[in-house]
Image (cartoon, rainbow, N blue to C red):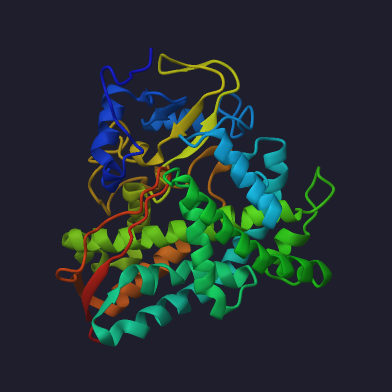
Length: 424
């Protein structure tokens, strides 16, 4: 039988535990690597090998729920009905996203996204990422201090993906408010009234982007969003419809394409300040160490802490029976600190061999399609830091280092830093 509250009680829905979950993850790996959260249908998978097994076996662990009534949270079916009615009444009910589909449907849709995010397109975007990283950091360099999250971590990936999605520069912070709404809506942590408030804000975003979709259908261009709007998907015989486009705008482009990178940029700065030996090592030879540093940030802090898979039939994992109709919570962040796979897993190690073997971008058919762009944004972001900062520290008395309550993602609320500009 699965380990339950009788022998181990870990509440991953506890906001206090979410502030630093890594000790809890170790206990799960050691004592209950396949853990049934008491009172739920949720099974948490925490060891590296088991996470990889789940991700590479979509037949046993598909991405689609067996029925609409299956929910991976305490939120009841009545709330789900209210949310769906609110979208239908005021906007567009989001269709299943790419991450929530299985083959052949997923493979057909993924081919279109692969075209949109192909290496040549990322290469074209790269100079813009570089120039924006320096533009942002130079805007506050003379001040000697900043709120790192809002002044750098948010705008770097947000402006890049926003430009690719046809949004005007002056609208970017409005869009941030809408992506925040989606971020909180999927947290599995909101009371019903707040949940519905986030839905209303997301619907505002839908009405902002709908005219852009309609314009691009009449007048396609070479932007990434035009590819998403107009590409006919093989096997479907049509491009994405409005409900599908609105789902992808929030989930896979703005939140997947900016929020997670924002959180990695914040985590990386915090790690550098806490590990000055690593900071000096990175500064000594950024060409040699930057790639590994980026991978280590994603591994150690895992902006995507976990996502969901499901079971359509009874399965077994590590000797634990998981009934049909269960939710499998795949804890990437726990796998990324598994000492069975990584030597000294809690250490930030710029000489770590095969640093890219982490699960921070997932694995298998659902491997993060935006990973190449995220890696470039992180590399250029921290290259600008190395070039512009001599040293930096946490601003005295201004940080409480709190994270947003969230079952799936890890997001530092703010990070106040002071720094000494590098002498040129």
